[in-house]
Length: 251
Ligand SMILES: NC(=O)c1ccc[n+]([C@@H]2O[C@H](COP(=O)([O-])OP(=O)(O)OC[C@H]3O[C@@H](n4cnc5c(N)ncnc54)[C@H](O)[C@@H]3O)[C@@H](O)[C@H]2O)c1
Image (cartoon, rainbow, N blue to C red; front, side):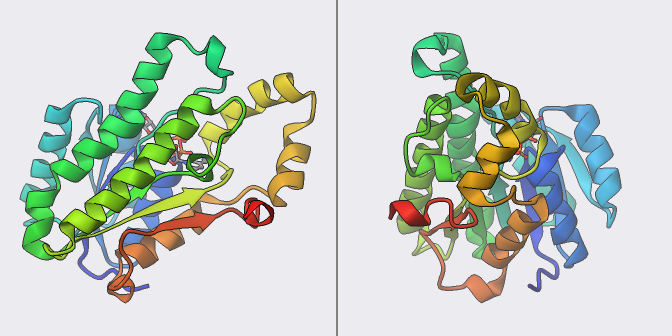
């Protein structure tokens, strides 16, 4: 998928899916800005990406940080074509055990962060008829035991994406979401212990039964590359499920 010259800002790009997207985009000719709350990780990630990638420290729960990251990317590249709202956190607890503070923090990152990333990127994207990609999850399409707060936040990401796609169609801005199932990243590494404790089943066996195998960050990056490319010119308001047939039997 050709991404030549696409000026792209990716949040949560210090590791995991955001970093894999940054690498693939840079390899395909995009100019990438990596933003993350973890300043040291994102600096190292940008160095790993190479291709003149830039790193920005940004806490997506703070509207002023998101505005500054967008302004910095626009200043560095002379404009913005693609905004990828990827930063997210998880809580693996039953809802009654989730503290009010944990719930609020998860919503602040996963929902408010995406809202700010849409809202504040629009002026720059309207100049370029650019696009927005929001990282949701298959957990946003149904309830998931242990991931209740996370699941609710990812459902909100789908609805934000759909509404933004309709509202921004006239401005020529496409908005889509990606819904992966379990992908091999540090986030999933952190889920192993709580899932095994709750189910008594080896996580590898759980994942194998549910979805055959874990996905790879590179496989998610390929979908992001398609959605960001001009080949996806008629694709907006969609949420792309990629789950190795995990949810196929439920539909
Ligand atoms: N890994 C999966 O199986 C999976 C599946 C579906 C969806 N997702 C979603 O994909 C996205 C990336 O997940 P991942 O697996 O790479 O996670 P990860 O934990 O490996 O990486 C997430 C990155 O986001 C950053 N981050 C956290 N809070 C932030 C904040 N307030 N501001 C800016 N950056 C922040 C972290 O520092 C980290 O670098 C998340 O939105 C996640 O919910 C992941």
